[in-house]
Length: 386
Image (cartoon, rainbow, N blue to C red; front, side, top):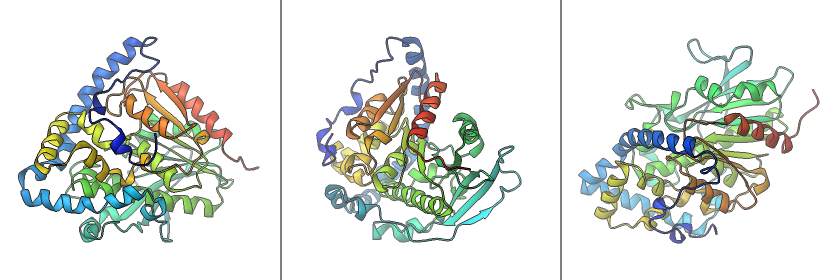
């Protein structure tokens, strides 16, 4: 799909289109049963995320102010200028410490907690005071697993929405397995998640969505900015090559980073968010709330896509060759459904695609894609002599 004006090319009912994959016939029971489980999960997650839209329905002024803020991003999306949207971060001082007592410490691995003051400044001047008022979110966090012999080729892993605990992701995605096969590993904490959760937010990650659509735009851009700081740090330490993988919202950031920065050795988005507006329309109760917001504001699906397209990988030409991109999707996934995974694959020409017979959180046959990831990473990274 052409990067220019993809929001006009997609039909307004795209979220209703088929979710079929080539695994449906071979693994029909696994695909259908996990799809049912995902529909239950997305109802719960949708209820939490729906809180971000409620003020727009209650207050006419809140809706008017939000529409004014959103209008700012249209020119950036329509021009598709990567450098203007994803500005290179200013140098920062990295703070390195041992994992604190009570925090996750991987057994038998030299682990360091990294933190730095995020250099991110909101793209929209009207958002700056408000957005930068979130004090905890202004400090970025990551955990770095390094080999004692010196820097190795490195995998950055970016977690999904709400979930930011290093221990769970280490188990879920076999990160120790990658470490023991020669990779340094960095787990990055997205804005408003984990240690970046504000005291007023009861759930990790809810702050990413609770400030409205313009706030979401800035949170996405901040995530990419902070990941680029990590890239700067890892290459400055001597890492021979660095790549990134992530799940869901982390998969979206993986694709965004490959759009914004040419230095990646590989990118592996897993079950990525691709078209947020269309995705949310497919959920309930968020779909009903979003349709009510559009009716009240007069915005169409295409116009709302455009207003959030400033950070979409579909808006820009990737800076990473498609041969270095492996996109993973669940045939039974009904949060980031197969239609969205295919959309990114079609846009990212010559990228590789792998389906597994599971949903967003139940990754059946995961071993097959982990082995493929490892072989894919080996092919595109430099292995130093140690």
